[in-house]
Image (cartoon, one colour):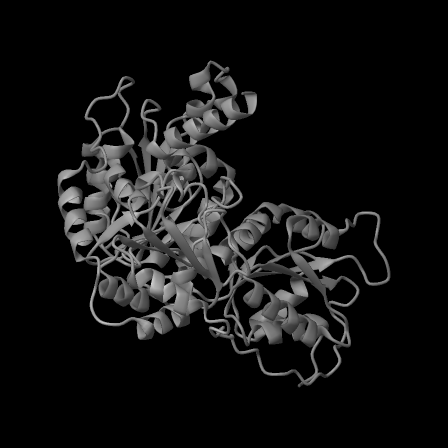
Length: 552
């Protein structure tokens, strides 16, 4: 290897794994950013350090490719912690390159960054002059293998010093697990004997590229299929029921509850997916195939730790003859056609503001077909997966759900905008509370996106808290937000924008799309607080039942 500084060596190794870096420049990472630029890495600046990891996280969720975030030491590092925790909880491979205390010892202003990261579940890899390259490679391989966020720390006194030459091994090949104990044979027999089989796919199935094998398996079995919100439309086709959980219809959920054998492929079975324990029937046999090392839910009867794509292919080869569940599919078609769909929304509301359901329906009809949707967390987050057409699983990026946070939407939109193809429009859905938290990075999005629509569900409140606690008589004063003119703010930063008080006001968005959908359009939609999302009602009922059980 050629002579490089420690920062340069870190950048050089990273350049063999990734092409994009997001962050804010500071004392601790300025040498790294200089080296990254010389190596041809694309740097997308954000305006708050909290956006660095959130953008890199969303870049991976959208493209499946690794990206890095970078901050300086101390306050720059601590500003990034919420996004780091979200990436860890959501099992997203991402790299945070940060400055750190000098190797000679901490200064008065330093904090124990490695201990903080450990508390969040993220491993820290501190580089040295002798092994800057190998430590960086170890960190990246750890992130990819473990599906997690890692921190690469560069001590401040080493950033500009010359690094030692190293001979690095080739990047590790991803390993595919084999059926070493015959468990797949048992799974094949269970599925072959099912009368009402269901295949439920999650993000792990999408990341493994298992969609074709699972769809073929479903057709062989005559199985119904469904997906988590993070695997939306992965198994779309004959027998597809849509989203499993609170974003799905009651008719689809009823059919899932009648399945006798359920193959869960690459899904963790979160409380939301499981409708807080009510999704699957008590007598159903649940099989889980996942890259995890152990079952992720107590309902799992048979568990296989394996690559989902490889496992599904092997099961296909083990099956004999035709299908056993065609009657099951026919019944499902009939009931789905007769059953109620999602509520279409109302023209009038008690406070005269927009019904988010009718707004979502209208937006779906006008937004470009080639769309990638990024969502912040909040009460509104079900409207897109419930009402919008999402072309592919990677076209719905739901941030904040793992760590139950809001405020990462704008930052995530920056990363997704860098990952999507030029001909695809990025659509960000955010609440007004979360949007205000990340407002500094509206400018970052405007700079990064070639085509973006921002939909703000502006109810002048923290809507989730209004429904959870205001409805129980707690004071709503801390839950309210003065009505912000986001349209004015957006125009000041260079976006086109309009306040949407009625569906007719959406003509401004239609005109922008018809003109080429270039740049960023911010739709400041004034939403009623009188409509509670079905998933929120389900959550509240489950919480009340759990409290009653404890009290009893």
